[in-house]
Every structure is written in structure tokens, then in C-alpha cells.
Amino acid sequence: MKTLKNKLFIIVGLFLLVGCDDYLDVNEDQDNPSTTAPQNLLPAILGNAATLTYNAGEISAYYSVQLATETGFDRTRDLWDFSLEVRVGIFRHHYFDVAGNAFNLINTAAEDDLAKNYEGVAKIMFAYSFLITTDVLGDMPYNEAFSGKDSPKYDTQETVYEQIGIQLEEGIQDLQDAIALGNRARPMTASHDVLFGGDLNAWVTFAQGLKARWLLHQSNVAADMARVIEYADQALDQWVTPSYAFSGVDVWTRNPWGPNQARPLLFSMRANALSRSAPSAFFLDLMKGVDYVDPRAPQHFEPNDDGEILSVVSGDGRGDIPRDDLPGLLDMALTKDDSPIAFMTESELFFIKAEAAFNSDKAMAYQSYLSGIRSNMNELEVAQEEQTTYLSNSDMVAQNANDLTLSHIMVQKLIATYLSPEAWVDVRRYNWDPNIYPGLSRPTNVQESVYGEDQWITRVPYNMETEYIYNLPEIDRLGAREPEFLMVKLWWMQQ
Image (tube, one colour):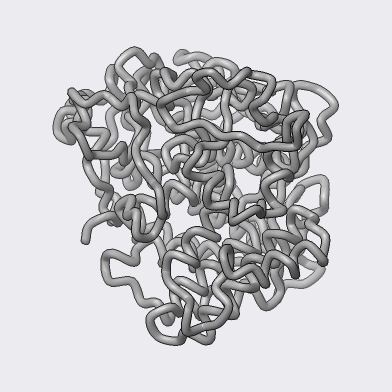
């Protein structure tokens, strides 16, 4: 990986584009500035973080079996085969577009005692970007990532996680210092901070939410569930959803989940495949009861002319089902050109709290479970009457704390995290357990020569254009050239 410590080609606007490999040299370039004012860096960091979230969510949707392609033979989505891929964009998006610029912002703001607000926000986004990316890749460069080395050492995922926690704590402290500065702090307006309009308390709340997510991910490696609940409560107390708004006006301002399939980072970004996909039979079955359909289903999947929402078995494709009879996935609640992308939602926080409380306080877990369902329905603007009907349906929802199971919580969280990177995190944490996710099974066309009869994909490869050229010693040390590397469990999956 070529790093950006001394050189970063910055284009301030909605998205940041970095040029070809010549621009990744670590020598000083007098024609392109390596620093700029903090307020100029922040919009690009946030815009690119939305793209990063989309990219991880696009991977997650198929590997958590929320979606399946209509052919059943998509090489990476159905067959889990990356052998012919040229690049994996999420690696580049993280290091060059989000974390690289957040790193520069941290250093720039640290030189100004009145820019603690920018320093704190930058540390939170730095941590956010690492958390999203390590959950897709596993081990990755951290300590040497921005050192100027062409071939930085890969740190263990455990080390990366430790550093994420430190960055979140430091970011919160910086924001508290900035709040104490009051009007003396550098201005941060809605034109600089498109998430919260400079509301530093909202940033603190977001960071607390990320701490809850970060710690819950470590549930298999002795995480403290009481602290998860504490962080979730602190976030929920004054929660403001960090949503990145898209206007849908042109290619630069369209949600990449939208019908125009905007690809602002053309050369490396995964285009959405929603026009040739459908809900998997597994996922849609979770949203159906006896003669009843979850009112959230038509918010995500457009019924056909007969009023039906059909699904496909992952890997089987649509078979004899006419294409026009499959539901439309584009231009729905989360997939319009101007739909926002949320970095985290209130409903996710409620389900985090419900899972964390399940073994110690069933009553708390149950109330959080119900709140999570209601919050997700509110996010999708489901009518209150429909919410009440759904919550009273015993086929779909546990009716009391005594009946609540972990499966109830995790199924509802899977529904609420449709198109979110968190869906794949959760199914991996629970080792694809069909007792937690009833009916879950692999796509039928997975390469058995690599994955055998029962193994699952646990990660995606590193970026072929950089790591498999410039950093082969580390790639070989990790065994990342072998196809079987993609089913090596991540650190937080260990049980």
C-alpha cells in the first residue's frame, strides 16, 4: 500500500478523488497541497464515508443472504469467487479517501488549540472508517499505515480494535474540550459538517453509539455486556441519526444505492446490482407469517402486479419466474437517488442493547427489542396502526419477556439492518447458526473446491492493485494469496 503521509491530492467537494499511482508517491509535491484548513477537509471525509458505508453494505447484503442475484451465478456475490477480480475498492476507499484524509485533519487540527472540534470529529471518523473496513478485511495496516512506507506491516485485527477504542475515547474528550471553548472554537457550520451542522453533542452521542457497536462486535472475545448497555444508553439519551444526505441532482450527489447507480469512484467502487437481484427466500421468509407480510417488506421490495413479493433461493436464481414478477429493489425507501445513507441508526442501538441485556435482564432486553422494531418502522415511515398490528402478531414478535429468545432479537436486527454492513458482522458473530437465523443456508452454487460443503465466506481479499504488488511479504505471511484465506475466521469470530 502506498501511503499519504506527505502527499494527498485533495479535491474539496462532495467526494474526494485520488489520482493514479503516480499521485501516491510519498515525496513532497509543490503543485498539490498536503494540508488545507480543517473546514475544507471535513466535507470530503464525510462524503467518502457514505461511499465506504455503501461499499461495505453492498458486500454485506449478499453475504448475510439478505439478497440474491436473479441468475444465481454472479461470480463474487453467489459463487464467492474473487479469482478474476482486479481490485477491491473498500481497501482504497478507507486508506485514501476517508482515513487518509481524517489522519491529515487530525494532524492539522492538533496544531490549533481552537480546532478541538475538528480534531475530535476527525478521530471519530478515523475510528469509524477503520471499524467498517477491518470488519470486512480482518488484519490490516494501522501503526505503519500512514508512515510513508510503501509496504507497511499488517497489524492483527485485535490491535486495530484496540486502537479504534482509543480513537473514540480521544475523540470524545476533544469534543468535550471544544464544547468548553464555546464560541472561541473554530466555526463548524452545516456547510462543513453535513451530518450534524456543527452540533458537537450529537457527535459525542454518535461516538458513544460506535463504542456500543465496537464492543458488541467483541462478544465472542470476552466483551463486557454491561459496558455495551452503558454506551448504548448514553447514545440513546439524545440520539440524532448520522445520515448523509443526497440531493439526487447529478452523478456526484446521487446515493449509490439509487436507480441511476451513481459511481463517483468509477474505477474501484462496486456498482449496485439491485436491478438484477431479489430478496433471498431466507430473508423474505423472516418477514412473512401466516397470511401476513411484515409492513416493512413493501418499503424495500416493490410488489408485482398481483400484489405479491416473490423471492429467490440464493444461488438458484429466478428459474421459471418471469423477471417482471420479481420485486423491484430500486427506488424504494433506502434506494432512491436522494435517499440518505445512515452511518448508524437508533434501531440498531436498541437491538445492540437488547442483545447485550439478554442474558442478564430479560425485561430490559424485551423492551429494547420492542423499541428496536418500532424505531425501524418509524425510520421507514410505517403507519402507527400497522406497527401495532405487527407487534401484536405472535407469529412475528415475542409477546412477553419470558418468550423472548436470542433468535427473536437477531432476526429483527437483521431485518432492521437491511443494506447495512452490520448484517454480515452479526451472522458471522453467530457462526451462521440456523437456530439464531431460521432457514439460513449458503448459496447453492458456492465453489465447493474452496469452501467445502459447509464453510462460509468470512472476509474479502485485500486490494489486488496495491497489496498483491507492493506488499507481497505481508500478503504471503497472512496466506492471503490462497483462495481458502476468504474463509479464515476474523479475530472477533473466535469462540
